[in-house]
Figure 1 (cartoon, rainbow, N blue to C red):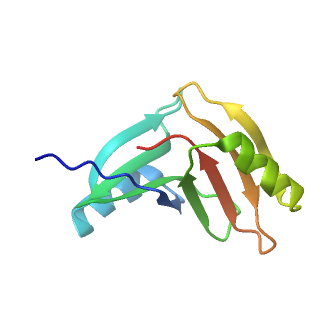
Figure 2: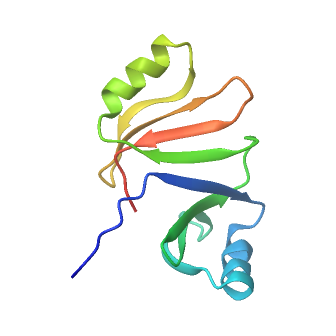
Amino acid sequence: MTSEIRRTFYPLIRAADPAKALDWLEKAFGFEPIDVHKDDKGAIVHAEMRYDTGLIMFGPAGTAKAAVYVAIDDPDAHHDRAKAAGAEIFRELTDQDYGSRDYAARDPDGNEWYFGTYRP
């Protein structure tokens, strides 16, 4: 019998040196790299690592205090609700080249929330 995990929340970790962080997380905590995206210069811009049934995503350091990616089924309705409630939308609803439809907003404390259909 096969069981598929339907994850919803994904912590987003920011790292000053994502390549060093990926290596360290693997060696220190046993996280397994499952997807790594690099820019034209070879620098990691996004990575995903798994530990047991959990998954984290991370990339270069940003200005956010904390960030979370939330997988949702209806990003258009979710975006409209957030906008109507006064959320600071800093990345408008967009179809991504990797198949997700997503947007990003900040809460009143400056934390970043990413919502989209992507489920790693």
